[in-house]
Length: 177
Image (cartoon, rainbow, N blue to C red; front, side):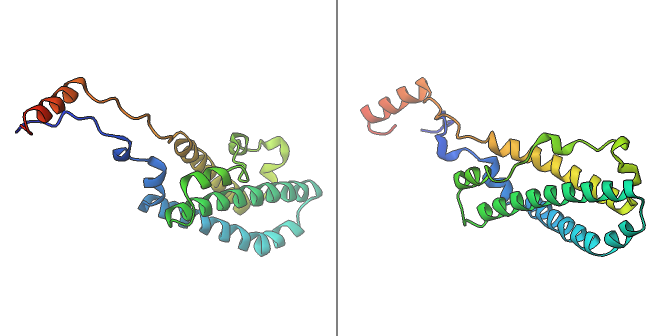
């Protein structure tokens, strides 16, 4: 028979966003950027940041301590999420196991809100403000991707077309038209 195949696809032909994304060049780039930000932040906090905080006022020192702790926590959560997703990409764990690991990585929407000036954010060194802003943007991006991956549930199996079912019966009856 020459004609169009009117059979609907089964669930084995559906594309999983989560599985395809973590194997993509886009994810590899996100992973490199995220881990580079972690390293850059660690180097800053252990070097120039420490020096800059020494000469600051008491209020600025308190703001620095609080924001650097939030920054470190946020980046560790980001790094954990990236490492879990990379493990999925490399076949070390399944997508389902990654969802279980997600319980340990607490990505919350509240983390994306910027600290207001009243909390001393404006007193922080420019480089720390920049690192905080970049980490919050990366965090928001990962939250978005995590939501897409979490919504990536298996689609219910499509129902076979009644026309295709009849064609199958005709093929069987007449020896494979």
